[in-house]
Figure 1 (tube, helix red, strand yellow):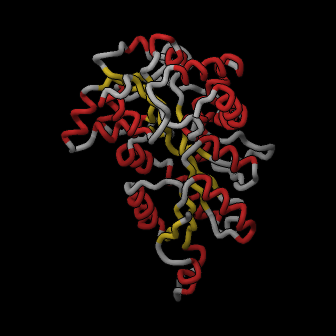
Figure 2 (cartoon, rainbow, N blue to C red):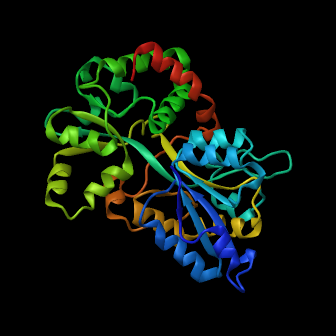
Figure 3 (spheres, one colour):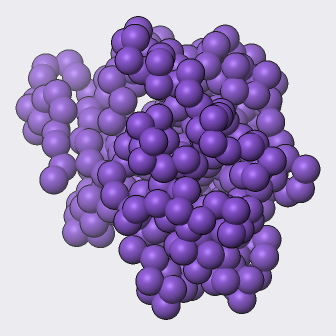
Length: 345
């Protein structure tokens, strides 16, 4: 269900002296309290007031299709690579030209430009798909690649959320690019055979499963672990102390990253404000906020950040894979069929 935040559009536009060009209508799948500061800082700096609708990725895309040309949306924020690709394919975005955005964001973390040089969407932050393990039961060398998660040594050890969750579909789609479909399906079967229990819960539940002894290895997005590392709750800190962390495939193609990104809506009425907002989100100020406020990795080149948890995980940097996000998206249907064949729920 979509939740409208702040004033309705009709009421907002009825306010005397409040012209349409002072408004930005935002559809956001980012549900992080820390983002409120981003929005308020943008308004303070520009005078552009943000009118926000919150939903998950699927809800936003469904609403855009239903609204069609009548949609008031100016900017769309989504939190999964495959959904960004799907929305682009479905024509829900308005490609734009911005030297600020293309100059700051690596090519693999934005849509491929069209024949006019315009880009449909831009990555704004990333989350690494990492492995945590029980330091007393598992050696880091046994889980330092995604491929090893399917090895017999990890039989009965692994906790992971549903294979059909977007975070896993993106990882599995990337594996198709690296291994090819035949080897990826065999890998998925091995991974499924190595589960300690049926997939359930979110990424934090997988981490807790390792700490409690329910399993010995878990796959999670990096920002879930970082939250626990930065927690003031003694129980959370005690849990983290039991865990080791691996950024897989550092000696090969690099660790898989999923991307949270933004785009101008196809029928945006406030295009200039929309572009200005996206450019703001890759400024050093905003990129630091993604890192320090929600434990995500900045995408803009050369941005420095002070998040102690992210730095503790990697020393501040790691090798990430370079495959285009569009390739990950195109593999989603193929991956889902593989999951069905191997019985991965």
